Image (cartoon, rainbow over all chains, first blue to last red; front, side, top):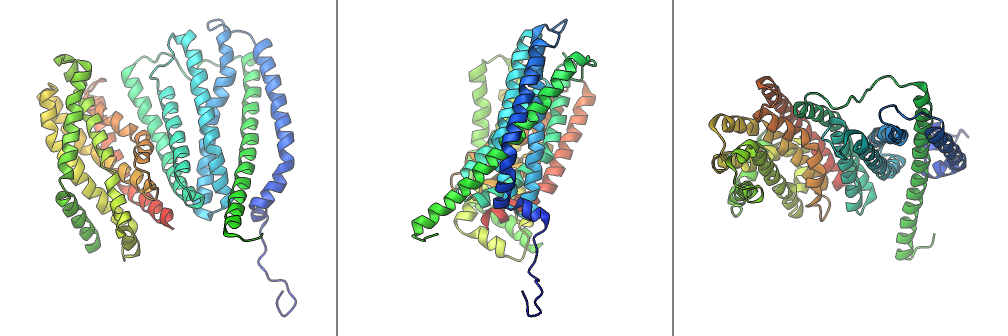
Length: 256
Length: 221
């Protein structure tokens, strides 16, 4: 309040209010249980479709059902990196602590989804192509993406000071985001050089609806699973940071 | 500009005066290249066909090995703080260091590469292409390497981290570097690979000083 009785203290915009870590905890807490329930329901529905209500492929047989896990995780491996890059922008441009937290929470999730995509892919590759691993463009660039995720996790762990870590990781994440398309392009160039007639086509023929329905359901189930786990991991990280602050105060003998 | 040249001169003088580190890296490069035949056998035809890959791997490893001395000594003796306070942008300091790094690691390796070419049974034209592809590709390795060193400079035990972070980013350089030498898809492929390699180097040289400077400035605050 100033002398005229007019409140001229700067107001937080709605965005700042939503993104304040404490506020964030309180407005996202009620979301977690519904999200968990919806993604569990979608998983049940999708798995039921995948196992009992979709035909086996006339060439690949029952192994086609691996697709319902493989494709959603492969999509998430890239989507999570995009989410991390957006958070990195938030860290660099606005220096927002919530962006740091979101970036840090997303890295292990992205690594796990990428590893799952690679694992299910090689499980699928063994019966259909006869090999666990082929130096195909998509597989190779996914493997490199996994290395980048693991490098980012290692970078987070190497710093003691999390604020400094966030800025450095953000720079690396953005440089990685610029590089990922280049890596993708170069690996495609390289693998077509080695195997001129591509063994399989990734775009494939148009799928019949009986395969598409379970795929879509699983796709949304996995994406919601990521959103839920991301929120939970952000909550954990915010609380962990508070705990570290409280411990420091306690060590200094301050009372809160 | 005089500051830029000053940093460049200082880096060159340090690396040539500092106990023969340049020679150590060259020796490492040659030993890595010479150790491969022990692992895969002395078959000349096989060696000749994979020699470009061996030379690129050896150069890549040697350049990764030299990363830790790029910023860490300057941080430990306080020079990095002086650079940040100085009346020149951090990006131009990094650019000078990248150039000095290339001159003191990549160039000696390229000069030493005829020896590896000889013991790996490479023929003349292939070796000529190897030298051109190394000349075009190693600036990108130096630039990416400087970025990795800048990212990890604030970490006390970051020596192993920089290669881990940088190696995935260097995959395109290796692909086009070796692709430009061994034209598996015909000579057209090789020259397009050479052009991609040059493009990668130019882009990396142009962008990495800014990214590295950002990482140093914000890692030190």
